[in-house]
Amino acid sequence: GENVEQHPSTLSVQEGDSAVIKCTYSDSASNYFPWYKQELGKRPQLIIDIRSNVGEKKDQRIAVTLNKTAKHFSLHITETQPEDSAVYFCAASEGYQKVTFGTGTKLQVIP
Amino acid sequence: DAGVTQSPTHLIKTRGQHVTLRCSPISGHKSVSWYQQVLGQGPQFIFQYYEKEERGRGNFPDRFSARQFPNYSSELNVNALLLGDSALYLCASSWDSPNTEAFFGQGTRLTVV
Image: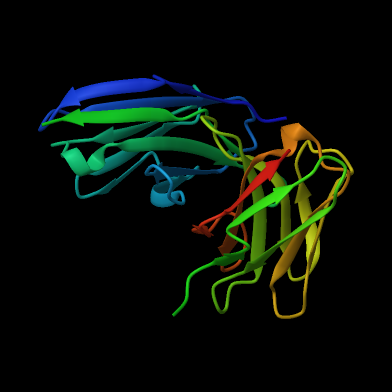
């Protein structure tokens, strides 16, 4: 089955700096890669997603890149703000069969 | 427009008991997925239903079962509860399939004692 590894597990950055979270996946059939933000005690919320036919996608301060050959995808957050502090999860899906989440990255933005 | 709603929000059960968790998707969404999230870990996929048919199943024992009703709401059932079943159970709905944006409910916090 699919295995998604996520690094780092914790990340502290100064406000205004950039944050990068990396994930690798094992199943070459995976074709959809969402990223979720989960604040303490709240539900996961989709912040950006990318499909396998696209290499990069950007939405304001958030961007995701995908390298299908290397089976890597990354989340980039620029100009971080304190409200970006949360746990971020990557995930990989091949469709109906299964959605596999990474282990999460706890991001702390220090004012 | 209401989001994904789950009930109950909290539940305490005794080992060996049975539990039923409920989920109402966003109006118009036909796909519902269930996840188990243990504290400090990512959600683990349990089931995915689309148009009332099971389309995906994760690595969970047969004690876990689910179904989707004609109105697209869903139930997750867990029999013979174990202490290790204590977790946050999340339901997510999407328009067509898991490969479209999924919206999560607030979850049901299950504690097995």
